[in-house]
Image 1 (cartoon, helix red, strand yellow):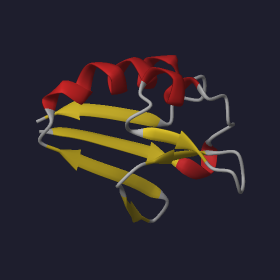
Image 2 (cartoon, rainbow, N blue to C red; image 1 turned 90 degrees about the horizontal axis):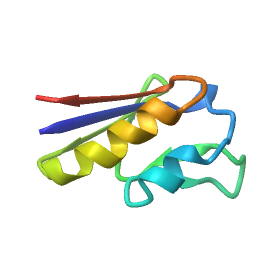
Image 3 (cartoon, rainbow, N blue to C red; image 1 turned 60 degrees about the horizontal axis):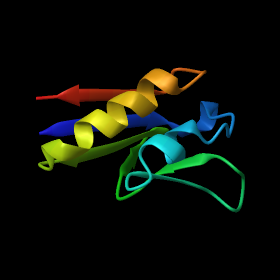
Length: 76
């Protein structure tokens, strides 16, 4: 299982996550910040748990590219 977490309020809108993992991230037209698709919000932490292990590499690359380090990706 892949667990992805986004601290959305700290997003600066650089768009790297969308470029590297477009199936999991998109930019909000309202505020220009990243949105983790199909995620659950818990106190500002947006979390997606997926059994689709194929998304790990793209999301891990997005996490490493994020200049404010607000994306965490774990394989459990």
